[in-house]
Image 1 (cartoon, rainbow, N blue to C red):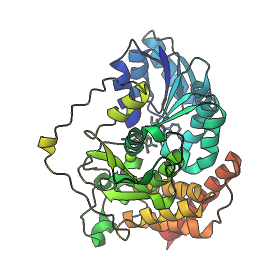
Image 2: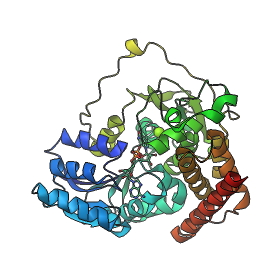
Image 3: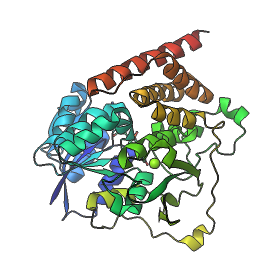
Length: 394
Ligand code: NAD
Ligand code: MG
């Protein structure tokens, strides 16, 4: 029996993970679930899956959850706060941790899981983008196993089985090709992007996801974060990572080898496939995803990304090349800018300007410790908020 903690259980990835787990009750047991504010949804999940522990964001939330659970006769122990998140990620009974909190908030508990030597199923790409080598070191030093949930990275992982743990060059890899749908604004007139609404940006053509990652997909910052994620997961330099637009989202990514072979992983765009793959690795389990019908798909299209249409993609490549804490600055500025866009404070085309401003004005340094990374995260957020406030006042 495997005992699973889900960090971010009420989110899009969390719900898909529970869907897969529910298909295999003889193999998986839910040890703990967390949610930030959606207490009623977490209560319903606890009623169904009967975890030993549940964690929410605040003391009030914990009181409310306890009341809901006891009313239904559920004995789940309720806790709140970041320390409790770290505790459910590292408890001795836990075998696997699904890291599915969105953004920098997921770093501490995801790192706690790595430091405790767990099998870490990584959806929370922001945590790895921020902490980079520090996170990879924590995995290696503590015998943890890092399995990518991001569909592209899960695809790459599947396409380079003999390369796990080796430098791509040494394994004969010429190039990693990350596919991207291009999001909802791939063909829209760039001049009209100033007026798009949060709901339009969140209406992804092929994937149903949380709002932050949906906006990231529309700006293609999501792909930029994924380039950095691929760098850390697979040890590939920026020059070896290519982005290719593929609107159907059927090929989840590819690996080109020096002999001319290209391996790809295909499937319907449904996150339950990479989730099931990582849960059962190296075995395979059913995920509930329908078999791919290529005759029905009929056409697969590809094009190179236009970096002028998607400046966030260029900013991310620049941050990767700059190294140190530059990716942490990029990530923090992006989180603030996306939230400001979702809150109606700035327009869609101001997102990349906020990020560029932060990267230009906050000097990056060495990513020498998690504390140094968190300090840069804090400085970047302050600079982003100040810039947005100043523009709003102007
Ligand atoms: P979501 O917004 O649907 O869910 C986020 C979860 O995190 C929720 O359970 C929420 O309660 C929790 N959370 C939010 N803020 C928190 C905080 N401050 N402290 C603790 N918990 C907090 O997001 P999602 O789409 O499920 O994405 C989760 C992560 O997975 C992101 O990093 C995203 O980039 C990554 N990811 C998602 C998809 C997808 O298809 N949704 C695909 C690939 C990668
Ligand atoms: Mg992805």
